[in-house]
Image 1 (cartoon, rainbow, N blue to C red):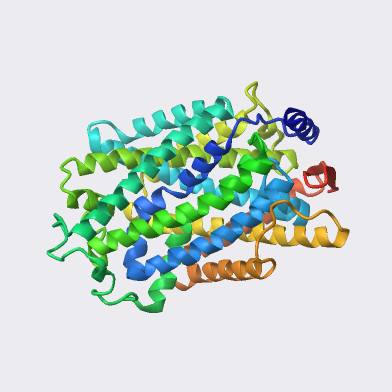
Image 2: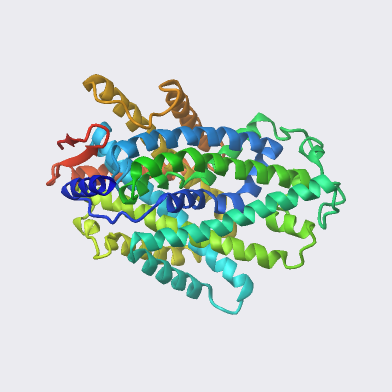
Length: 486
């Protein structure tokens, strides 16, 4: 019965122009989402967030995590109802109009490109720690070719890669939490704590919970929301999940909570061991934990972990941007070549394009100073939050259509509707405003505004009225194709 159902589902998707292979199971998707949201934002960006807000950064991660969970529940409801690879780009086209879908899809690709460029550069820097005599561009080229080749194989290969990459990161973070907690509980003397005894008192003994005031808490949101960026990859996997109705709800309900716990517990332990104003001042904050445990090979252990984190992030960036580009091509919002499928069921042209973007990024990063992280994070935050707002708006429009047309209720409904969705959208709008308030992140609004204007011009010149096709999304709840004429 299940095989018959999946076959029917597959045939409908084929009719809609989606011929991607369904090879991702719940294990793959859970760890892919974990991996996409645990990376640069935690291993590097957390130090910047702590310096802005002090111990209050824990509250920022809790608030931001709660908002992201509501975004994921909205996306999860749409993904279970319409399990297509184009995901939120196609949902925006259907429920908000083709221009909204065009902007949403390309903005996500823009986000992934920025983050991927940062990640490949970080990977080359990490490898330079062990092989300083090797030119950085060699490592960049090697990893682009390797991960590009892996993404050209079946999606199951990608899923397995991401599972193991993410597993290493998760195990490392758990080790950090347990090791750090042991330092706090048993009072081990840390190697670089400046003579300050470890303990929960460090959370309030150096200026209180809000050492930089409420303004510091607000400033931290630019980095905090960047850290959670990428978790929306869960929705993109719906088109290649073996059983979306089962896999997507399980991943959505568990992954955001786990990510939130990882961030809050890890940083809580870290700030209990070291005064918050000393974190990141002498290398990575996670090296400090290992040094505190008396592990002589701490830098090498951390380097192996962050290399894995970079590989995982690049892998997810290529996958996510590629699948969204595939969906855009289906709608006539991108060149038709991006909808070409290999014999393994993979959109190979999108992988090639991401590889090209990363090669350009190698040249660009050669002239970018090392302190560019906040700039990249703020620009990526703008793109990420924009995508999240469009997800929420699409969800609101879908719920209204369900009510207006008397359609069957969703099997995986978003909780606390509509209050939670409205509050979450208001919070996301506040984050955009925050980017403009602070000088070091204000450029994100200039870049983001310019990007949106360019998309508007591109849509008017090359998309609108130019051979647009009908987009058909399948309503899995009612089993009736829902057609949007464009």
